[in-house]
Image 1 (cartoon, rainbow, N blue to C red):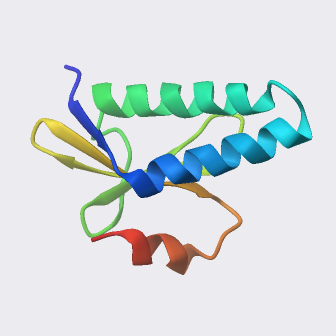
Image 2: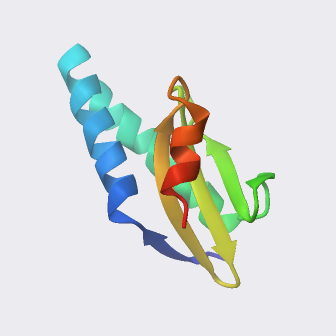
Length: 99
């Protein structure tokens, strides 16, 4: 079953910033990044309990091909995306973004 989806503005900004950076590295790479993030989110919507809880009720899914993870929470029939986070950043940073 496909869950409802809420993507917080901060997560949208994360993806937009990464898109811009990848596009400056190689034209078209930003589009590939967004496709991989979209595929990851689509999988989360279909299988929200597939990934382990990493902090309280928050889960982390890995984006294929790119060093990014998606932090989300699964509540009943809704998935909330909190961050699209580069793996080299300080791990404390993503915890500060969670409510």
